[in-house]
Image 1 (cartoon, rainbow over the protein chains, first blue to last red):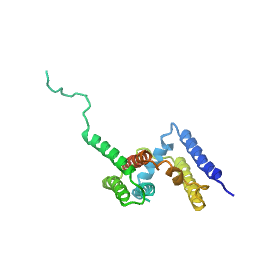
Image 2: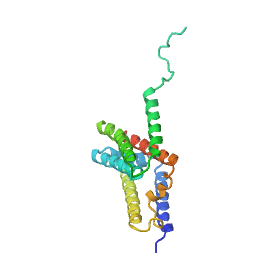
Image 3: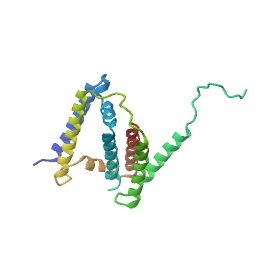
Image 4: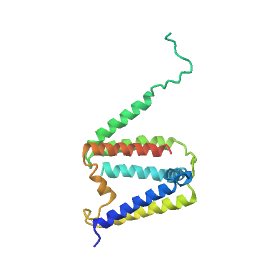
Length: 64
Length: 133
């Protein structure tokens, strides 16, 4: 049976991987998360997708 | 004596910015006091969303100042897919108390008025930041 420890470990692993990616990208402007976001946001469709996702997050936490 | 200095570098008070910050703080405080599943919460969240989305829609897409490298694009896309997959997998399991999702973990933090207001403000600031990308 899968318990909360397994699921929480998965989230913790994701955080660790994100930190490693950020540290690995230090000093390289094209490797930081903001460059990834800037690239995604430079396309109209994906820009709207991100903005609508943001709107959904607000609805999810503050309305529903 | 008493004459304005031409070319003064003294920073001017930016009243529109001050008004916007005050409005955002007031919005977050009022919104943080509203309960979920109510019309006032739905209306206020929608208004906050539109306040960000409408200017974002009027803004023209700017080319990325720094483009992500191919390696970074792959790495962060894989990371996002893994995070989404893990969240959806947890969401599909029951009961929630033993299979927490990011939402259920954060719900504890947004149960109080100050916590909810801080989260609402963070959401608004994130939207404003995204809209300027």
